[in-house]
Amino acid sequence: MTDTSQLWYSLNKDCSGIPKAPVELSPDSKETTNKFSDDIKALGEYFPQLTSLLATDKNEQGFILEISLKEIFVLCPRNRSRLDRYGKLQEYLKENYNITLIIKSQKTK
Image: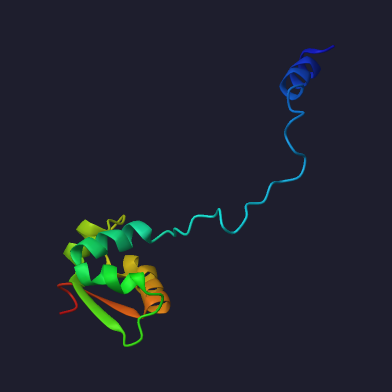
């Protein structure tokens, strides 16, 4: 037996209990988190009324949150402090919860 085949054999000999087909998770076992969960949690601490709005699936009348770029950069840090870094978060809140997030910077007074 060559060194490579011996190594291959030793690595694979105890794999009899591993299924050959990939195991799929049931929908109940998947987490319901997303990439904005930390941002939404931080915004919920800053805006206490946001937490109650997120408890419902859809906010019918709409809700507007206004925050400065400096404040949101502290709450939800990104690589750079720029408005365009929060565009996807704004879209997510608008589409899923009907919440408009307005970020004000000193340049866009």
